[in-house]
Length: 365
Image 1: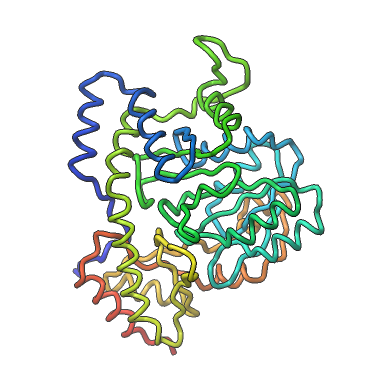
Image 2 (image 1 turned 180 degrees about the horizontal axis):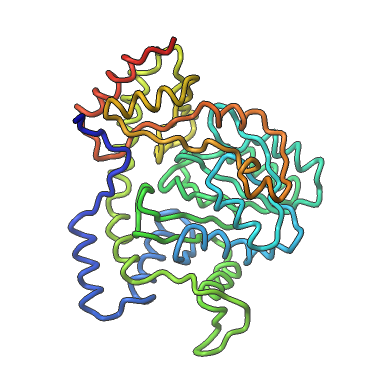
């Protein structure tokens, strides 16, 4: 049987084990001191004043949208090429996702398309941009457009921990931003999320929302939810954060090796990295034509892979039932061609060479 080159390895250090053990021995397992420390450490890492830990990236985004007072029937501009939680969070508020096409090369929402949409739909007052696969969006253009059209920006950084645009961390540009700590992400808390913002009022509102709308002991002045993070999860996060930059650098090195050795294959397009961006390669996503055949060939030869994402959000069965339609030709083309290869930091040099050798052996005719 062929040994597998794994697509994902969840790396846990002795530090996480030590911190979780301390929490378990303390008996204070729920939201508490470790959560506050994690919120402070992570927000400082992002260069943002406030952090609010949550139970998942999805609950973080839902909370952010509630705090931004998205109303039923209100349109929120976003990308159709992302995980469904991004647009579902808009639906949770009764809002309507308005899908805007992506840039074919970066996979991120196209700033020119954003402007075109906002000109046609002046009622839109909020957009969610996604730094997909770890590559930052074109933040200069997006923030300029947001100012010109008086539109608020939510950054979905669920796949971009530590990514930078012009030397500035993603999550520090918009009005409010969210991160996910699902186990496959660049860092994890087992399951969890984080909201970051420089806006004190938004931060306080989010803090209430995630804790049942609580304003004081057994006093609740807004409708809230149980979206809190536990001390156990925060302890894992504190340990993971210490290793984030090192593991991101390993992802970047692995991606550089793959690109240098795949760039001359005429039937395969490696991922783009913009000159002013630090891409942290949550995923290393290429484009090929015979994708299904290629995916099967890779797996047969021991290379795990994943097709992320095969459907635009507007073609998901749920969204078709809700009669969503969109004209996003770049998204349609990309969804038919993308496949993600292993890039995770636990890969060995031998495994990287093996990935390249197996790909070079594929007959694309």
